[in-house]
Amino acid sequence: TDRIDTTPYLARRLAANDVHASQHSPYDGLPDDLRDAFLTRENMILRRPRVVSPESLRPRDPGAYWDHRTATWVPRTPQ
Image (tube, rainbow, N blue to C red):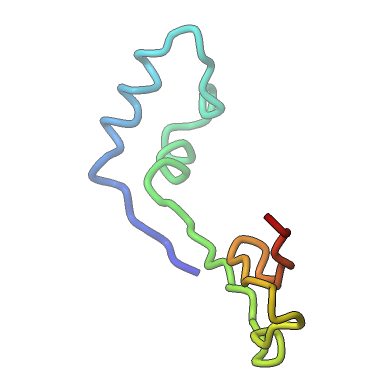
C-alpha cells in the first residue's frame, strides 16, 4: 500500500552486498538500471487487523479472561 524511495541509500546497500563476499546477491548479473530499480524502492503492504465483534467481547464464562494474543476468551484454571 506504500512505496518508499530508498535512492539515497543505494550506494550503502551496494557496499553492504560487497562486504559479504561469501554471499551472492540476487542482483548480480542484472543490468545496472534494473538492479537499481529493485534497490531504490521498498514496497510495503498494510496488513489489515482482525475485526473483533462486540459479541466476542462478552465473556462466555465469568471465570474466563481475554487473551489478546489469540483474541479469544480463555477459561481460568483453578489454582
